[in-house]
Length: 366
Image 1 (tube, rainbow, N blue to C red):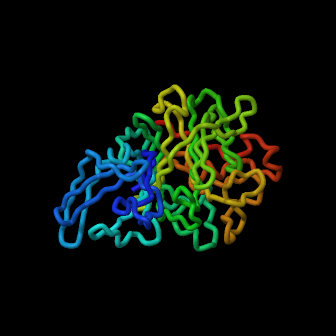
Image 2: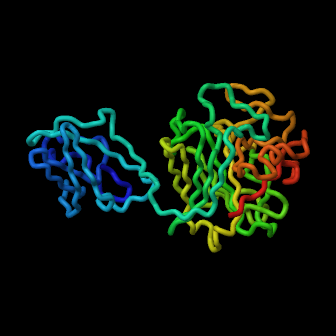
Image 3: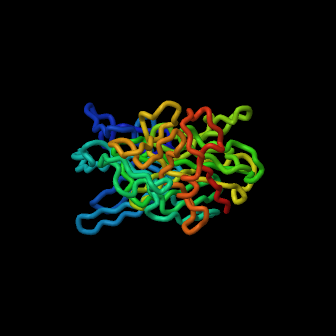
């Protein structure tokens, strides 16, 4: 098994150490959990520069009929964290010979689920079926855009001892048709953080291409741009307020298709001082686009009529929003539809417009 928390790895099995033709695992493994079916005892080994070293970690082994279960303590994997990707293979041996490795096509992969204790500051139930932007948008016609894949039903903001956590629950199945490196493909998720809502600091305009802005008096200080190819943390330039990537900052994206959740874990140190319980938040789902329009940061266009790769139902102007579902509490005024549909329609180039020329987004405050 490979754990990103352990640096030493070994590409061969323990039984093939020193043999002329070693049994190759096909990846570098950091930990070996070995069980003898003869006596049911298990041993955990750690990789070393020349082979494997037995450790003191204890695992629990249970064999019933043809099923073997092993419980390996997380400490044997180097104190893994939520979102860490583990690679593993099972090797069946007899005597001093390795016979078979599973899976046959290469190592299996497992993303450690989010098991940490989280204190939630904001828990928003978003209306189901409102993945229509201002109320008129329709999905692109290609079958990859399955019902509900842009429909947020719940959004949470939480904290633990290290991270600020944003969790989206999606109505549709979270799939990865284009093999995105983070485990999802068709969606782009935006989160905007205003550390001093109502003070008029920060940037009002959302990231390029979103065609929306925060209401007057508010401004975001950090934006989390989540997609599988160019995930970034963004902050406004102090002079121009134009968005720029925060260098040296990273965060985790944890996708759990079983619960239909995508979790963003951002180190609290990124945001500096302050109490997240007093901050303002905005969040939205858009279509991820690998070939965006000029000046648009990788989100999908909305045309008047839906096409294979374009949303439909957009107004015939230059400044309608590309937001498909804005996170907003069910039954709260103004509605998502009124916020996204109320703006002065324009034919001017977007770079000639100001924040007041776009849909006005209100903040969610815990």
